[in-house]
Image 1 (spheres, helix red, strand yellow):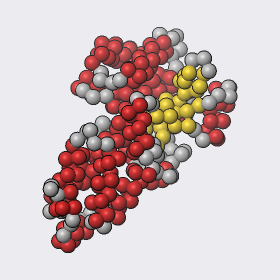
Image 2 (tube, rainbow, N blue to C red):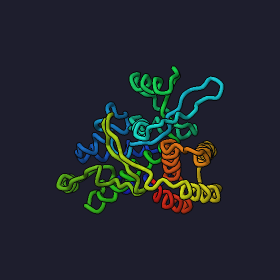
Image 3 (cartoon, rainbow, N blue to C red):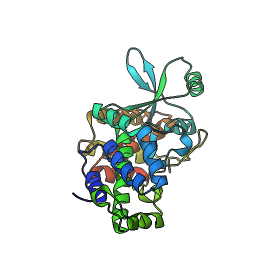
Image 4 (cartoon, rainbow, N blue to C red):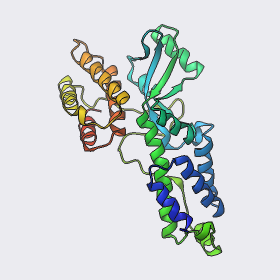
Length: 294
């Protein structure tokens, strides 16, 4: 029988093993080693985050504010003021991992309803009483789940480096002492590699981004490049439709005599989110091009 820490590493590398099961095995390790910080984090991932104050950075998600139309389904809402669109399009995912994995299996997007106060403000802004929600693509769910898997993998590798293995699911007194003498902080085992701007925010927090140089020529050049490579971007059908919708929005605004920067910026931000969640080198190249615009 392999040491439980080695099993944990192998399970983390196996994408067929649900992260929920991975968390349960990690909980056994943390509990037996009396690593209270990791034990607390694992419980939060298993049972969900009750408040935003403890929600980690990797659970920040970006989506599109949408309103329900009884004839056409969920339709995007566009705001004239970029800062409003930016603040409303960012939220923290507090759902337990099992719920996120279930949504992913169904191929569903994650819907995050607004508070009654926020919904009232949005309805007043658009001049219509409708149901509104933040719709975040499945790529955001994948990013959250992968972050949890990577944290567990890196933690298990560090335990092995420190001589903590757990033969027969039991840790010796020496191994417990070694674990106690080291600091295992969850944040040390997670690194955001996309280079995107993510912040831990309060409800009123804002993250300032702007179009670096508003040039319809540069934007149109990027859109042309994106359309040429769109078939090589590895995303599912729903995400592909969303990507094409954002492209159409930008093309309409760019061809207008008075293009609305806020709408263009919001669509570019949505495209960035989709590309960040896509796999393959093409998405990475497009992200570099997009980084010159926003």
